[in-house]
Length: 195
Image (cartoon, rainbow, N blue to C red; front, top):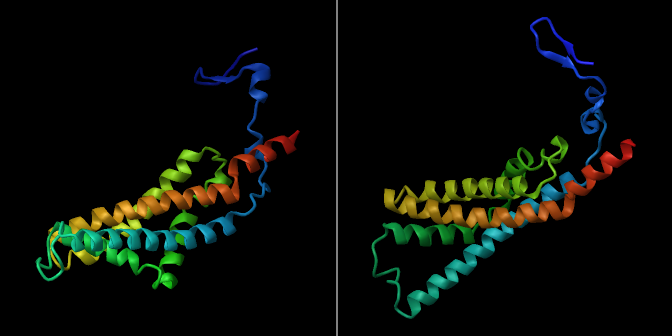
């Protein structure tokens, strides 16, 4: 039997209003391995950015060696290409500053993908999307900020390259976090344990 409220809205529809999200009722639901996943993902982010920077620096060195790019002494210390090379070099030194980069990545991922399992998000796409976004923001913002000190065009090249490096490293970190935490499996087990 349908019941109506004082303004004419439907209040209850009989037995169907008993369907409740049991995950919302379970306040003591414990999602395991989130902190471990965040720590290892942050370490992997730092190492991943460094390895991508190493690869890009190697590629630029080879291109300079065969004459496809001007050498460091033949080009001005500004411009878009210089910004790209600057971002690659800054990414290469990311591992040396691990005491800054690891906590920054841990904080950024902890405030985004670290909260998703507790909110009942089991799909892979939000984890990968937000890990890539935060990677792009952290690395692209840092490299672009230092690149602007040379020129605006250098800053643009450094920001775009850093954002690409960070997004790729963030994607790998999101996959690592999903592999460690397995939120879909843990949320499914929480749903089954209600019955």
